[in-house]
Image 1: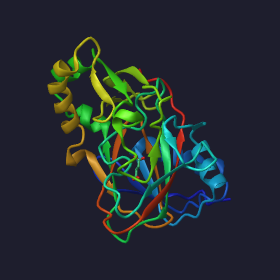
Image 2: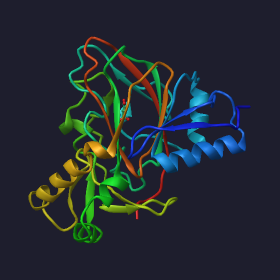
Image 3: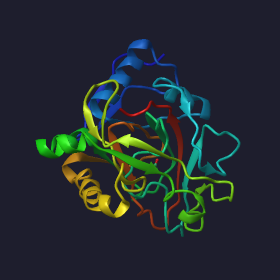
Image 4: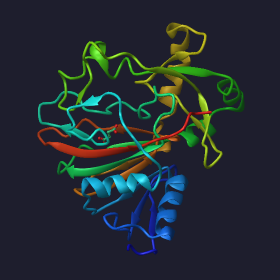
Length: 281
Ligand code: SIN
């Protein structure tokens, strides 16, 4: 059993904490699992360096938070639909997650979060950035907060998967581009209430959010563009420099993230398990 004493070191004023003293390869005691869950709620994203996780141990970490979410679009990740290998090979011109986003936001119930494990990491480059969407919402004027609170937005996967997105020619991690693929889209509130903390978070992102309900994409674009830029201002962010064996767990309900496409000549391989979430409200 892992120690119940968890050392939590906050990273920036907005979000993120490093957690030391937990061995995720062993079953966590109830107090340790509770501390991990609380840290995720408190900090939005947590980093645990120097782990060594088999696939089953990796899934067990995800299950401390909920059921496992199966991604509808990734393919070629092996036989196990609960696992996505996020692979970047030298020569790739694009990578998974290189724009700021909330994962899989087109689903009726987008994932609660994800557990990402660094299997092969570059000596430098390939960091992951995170942005706190509570902070983004709180920094808006009361009038803008009120307006956004009345709006819903269309979230679609048409720009990230399927034949029109044409991602597979550019990168090693493949998504569905077959003729049988169909777009998935759902309306979500622009401001969502976190089901566990009760706090309000901005919930729009550039790859998935196309328009506001009842408006054209052209009509929606100016305000969406403002929100896409506002939501990832530097003071809302933190940055993870990966080391082999590090684990990042993020809360997709209140955090956006971005994988920096700067690994140059180096390969990068991450193993990801997503956690099922609920419908935004
Ligand atoms: C992602 O889940 O968007 C990928 C993040 C990363 O590879 O750093």
